[in-house]
Amino acid sequence: MSDGSRRDGLRRLTVAQGDSQVSNEEDLILTTVLGSCIAACFYDPVARVGGINHYLLARGKATDETSLKRYGVYAMEVLINAMFAMGASRRNLKARIFGGATMRSAFGDIGNDNIAFAHNFLRNERIPLVGEDTGGTAARRVEFRPALGLARCRTVANTTIAPAVIAPRPTPVADTHGDVEFF
Image 1: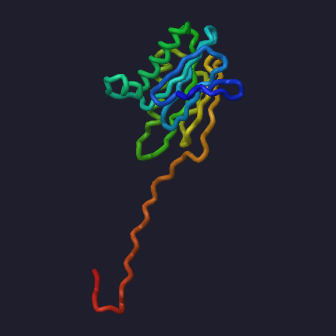
Image 2 (image 1 turned 90 degrees about the vertical axis):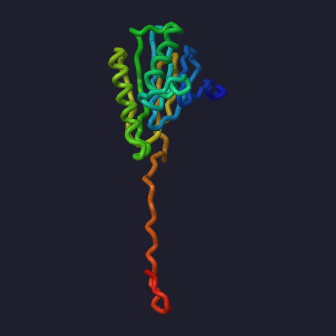
Image 3 (image 1 turned 90 degrees about the horizontal axis):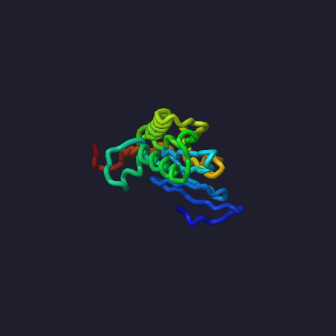
């Protein structure tokens, strides 16, 4: 996370890949930048507690905690449990999701897998999805005020990555004036 610097009277903390953050502080903005990753923002309007996570992959087979942080189910459970520890109630939770872009076709459809995981998780946990900005080909910057449940998502300009262009090999020019013939 960043140092919590103040701008406009508000503190900003960056949530990195594999992390989550929960707060009830009204002057705090939690922020992250996403490509194919997903950020889920949860909010309990009664307890005025919110949080955000940032996961890289929908699922995986890791067993160590450092690696588990990359996966959706771990990120969601950590976020929800941290919110419960601050007084949130499951019946009051509302969610927004962001990200899931297709950044490079060579990586497969990681973004859509991440989006599908988030939708299924929220449906299975009966947590209403009240907003989303997902898919596409551009990165996003998300800002979330957890104590107020306010989220803003902006597309990051010039983030789409064009497919690699492989220059054709130059065609050898025949030397019609020499004694040697190349073939």
